[in-house]
Figure (spheres, rainbow over the protein chains, first blue to last red):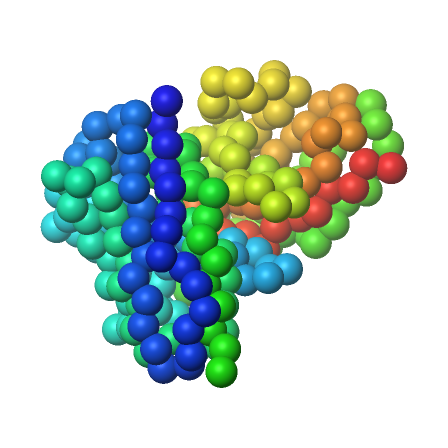
Length: 116
Length: 108
């Protein structure tokens, strides 16, 4: 079955960096667009970034453009989110999701806490 | 940027029909997807491309989209339907995914 597992979250100081990973299985990863979405505590869903199946097309939300970088490694069936210049307001659960007519499959999420 | 408006909350008795609205400028020209999120869990896709149900989603869930409003309908609401419900579109003008703010369903 389709599985997505995020990792790499944790506690980081403002201005710091983290790299999130999304390991997938159960489907042909290279066929699918993938995305990162986050949810701050008690808040709604916020889309962050989108990467095409080829990796050639990438989109970012304005809130993270220039600070976050999405990438993928089809040989490892994995997607990544490099997060730099982190701010307190980046504190959230970060989800990876697979596109396929809506986001059909989601990981369980990884918590990122930005605090001094 | 494109904005999707959802009422913050809906409260209903079991067995009644829940309707969640998602308002956006000419949203009828876009494809709308709906997600259910229960506390502590990842969201689950319940309706895609306005009206389609993924496998495993009960027939009680249905969707429509026209004009400036998309609607998710849950017939015969059950206690297990208590959750937050989010609408989502792709805005081609801004090349952004857009989520509505979500509606919390409370089953009385």
